Image 1 (cartoon, rainbow, N blue to C red):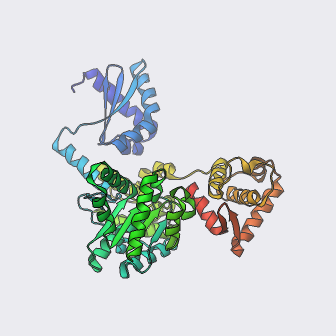
Image 2: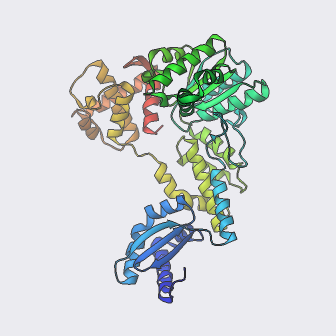
Length: 466
């Protein structure tokens, strides 16, 4: 679009004022080559090279742009954000490069007839060799190795834990490794959504016999995200019969979900019974050491050198979700390319500062209350009641202990929130839970007794903390 001289002057003045307002480095980072400013009547048009950049500009700078544009124009200006269309081969090439970087470490996508694999250019399937092992995922990794080495010896295997801790990586690793090393060919990996879609398609016309041959005549069946079967009664029955058929034949079944079998009661007692009869492995969010290993492994996939000091910064600031670590690296590399700067601590702190803020979970007292009540299966307001039964006193003390660990609330504030109790009650609760943890005490959950450390991990998983 050709703009008048006055509009060009307004754009120039706006860019200068914006650089002065937000600082030169931030201006170059966010309004450099990937962003264009134009004026159309009383509208300031912000053109961004991709969706991610556009969303961040809208979130971070809308008010600055409106205020400065209005001051320069002398009348109210509306700010609108749009994706730019590449206008030259160079622009198109840059957009393609950035997009390729952002998808290089992304999660696997669906491919073929039901098997989860990677359709991304240049990305190979996950293998167990790629998996970074730490204290929080050792048992899950050992179970995956057992499946590859001796399929059918322990079946079913069930992996559970919050999103982003590597469950899909382990399933895909088992699928690819068992094909290569054990030379099994009848291997099917799919999500619960794919299983459901395939079942419904069979009911509509392709036929149940064909569906059942496809999933019951296999040597290894892997199904991801079991929690999404909730509410699908007919599909759950079909899955139960499929699992039973494979177990009778001594075939290997591997399942995963974002919660424990006890928390999947909506899937029915029979299916949960089959799952619990095998090997159940909990995978917790990665600790900082494991996150650093993940960051190093992902950094090796990029064609720009990333100093270890930068990887340590990312591991320290980003939670245990591997997808967030990948996102931080992708943004850093894309920023380095856009600005033509080498990656160092200074660039990382500038480029990722707001990313760290966005991904850092701020825990509040009501978050702790909701998470504890969810894990213990009690009413969300019960922790604030005056009742003192064991079924409430234990989760209430645990909630107070977590409040001291994850919030800045004072003893008095915590006591007031959890049923108008005194600060000495909160101090006593903190000491009591410390003793439970040290002794490996079991506490009562809705479905039975549970190790207190496991209960804490479950609550922390829901909080996105720990």
